[in-house]
Length: 149
Image 1 (tube, rainbow, N blue to C red):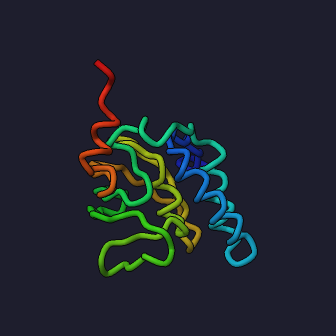
Image 2 (image 1 turned 180 degrees about the vertical axis):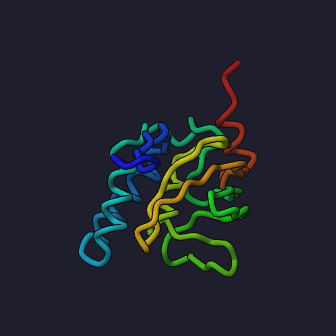
Image 3 (image 1 turned 90 degrees about the vertical axis):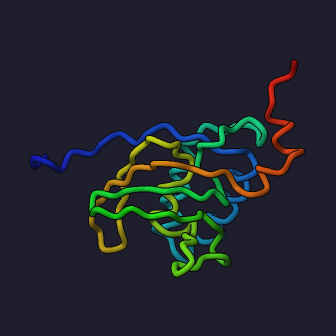
């Protein structure tokens, strides 16, 4: 391998059972329309550690999470990870069915990952902070996350 082209190992990722199931169905439905991104998402789903919905930490990127990341291109962006029909780049809503969206799912604050852009170039991004989805902040949801006394 040429210097500087070595592949880094992907970081461990965690995903809720409901996100995993919905994203698996979504990726399978896109295999004919957009096989490259569908395959990338399926690979991420294959390597994810799946946990019950109430057992995921607040700083893990999941569907609906708002996060801030920096990239090797000097970008510092605040985005929300969404399903394709909700995507709006002007509002900072990134689809899970984009190369960067598939790379972000399951990462925790502080983790970095390499991802391949549509132009074939590899970039590195680092998740700086994660805000859980709005529905995870509901009082009844937060009560379920507390350990039993």
